[in-house]
Length: 223
Image (tube, rainbow, N blue to C red; front, side):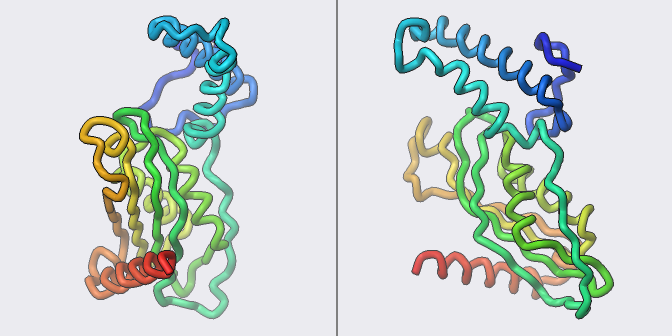
């Protein structure tokens, strides 16, 4: 189904997937968005027709939204490469920091920071390629988000796909809706959120170990 009008595809909540759209559907959305940005510029009295700085801005903004900032709404989750857990490894694995870039659902301002993932693999289960965690974070971040729900979506997807004994997600991020508008807080001001699954919910020692490893990785990045 090709997008031809605002009602041609059914809207969903801002951080839910629309589906794996065809190239024609994505192109249709981009064209419609560019037209709406032109209308917005008219309202704001920005001359995109004659100003060489903004002449192509509506088209660029439309492509940025559909192909980059909101890409995770219009594409399927990344394929997960699984490996047999041959040695039946069952200790905690922590990966991070994973660069995180998203967009605030409240003011359409950037969110940027780092994600950390702790995995307690099942001895008789599967393990996945390390880079796939980065791809999963990027996929769910590429839509309008609030940080708490982003952590939960990343965790729920990884639990469903890899079925570990336990999983922990920690996100530390700067919200430009707070640093570049409103209160205009210091750019050092961050929000930290966590989400836990399986053994992490029952084992406080495991949770503490995960958080210590996150702190260790953070310190390593500062040296």
